Amino acid sequence: MVTFIAPSRVNLAMLANRAAIDQHREREGAIMQDMEAFADVHALPEPPHGWRDFSYSILLDGRLAIVRQGSGLHDDGTAGPAGDNAPRSCRVHTFDGSREDWALDVRGIAFPFVSRLADGRWLLVDGLAGHEALSGHLFAADGSPLSSLRLGARISNVLCAPDNSIWVNYSDEGVYAGRLANGDWPLSTGGIVRFSPEGRVLGSLMDKIPMAWGGDNPMSLIGNECWVHGYPKPQLVRMAGDDCEIFPCPVENPGALAGDGRFILLARRFPWEASFSLHERQGGQLALVGEWSQGAGAIAQPRLLQGHGDLLHIVEGGRWIKVSTGAFRDFLAHSPRRAR
Image (cartoon, rainbow, N blue to C red; front, top):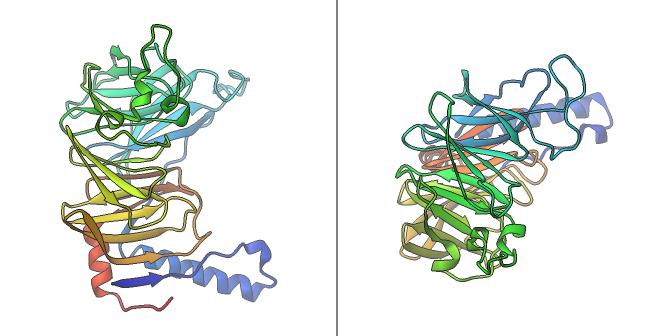
């Protein structure tokens, strides 16, 4: 097992003199240099005037989808809709690390999340839609509207898999909602639900593994497999069609994972420490290979922490950071060991 610890970031306001500031900057540069030894880092494009980046997602082709929402001002500077949850216009753009492209414009969604089906159709969901509402909206590749789906209420994340299935995750308000007026349980009480592109329920976490479940745990996709951190027990749940498997979770508070079949790369979520660990699948266990951390407070709480295939994606501080399972394994194998 190999363990690496990089220096922690210090608040510049707490540094007493210029020499200390210079020393801090040198140390911060070393942190990024260390991370860039195994990560690709790209600066995010700035949103235009009157717009803000609302949410991010990783698409099947590896591009970053950016959902931009009107920031409360029209392009001419006049006041827009009041309240953070007021429906506003939203725009979806894609970014490959160097080029940004427009994808579609949508109106009337207060809390939008986006993904894209393998056949090229766009899926935009409204996280604040009601239980009986059509919360999912499909668009053609050119942005023209197609149809709407009933995907449940209080959606916190949505991911489309290579087999065209749709994985939907719900917040606590959805998971622990009461029965509907007709006596049925809401879709969201499934915890994580898998849908067909037509909106047919293909299965749910609660159907396979009845368990105490805290909503809003980030999902990751490895091929058509959906991985998520179980709660309150420290465990990882792998869902692949009708198959479910539970692994004891080897780290505290995992936020996302990536993998190449044999190896699993994990990133922590709370507190965010820019902490990565590599594990080898050995039967029903995950054996630690090595880990690396910048230390607590070294990086801001990420806006996106998502695994997709063998890549971990982090969006924070105007940066898009990508860490591949193979690159991190090579980094552990060829870097000198550091003591804690």
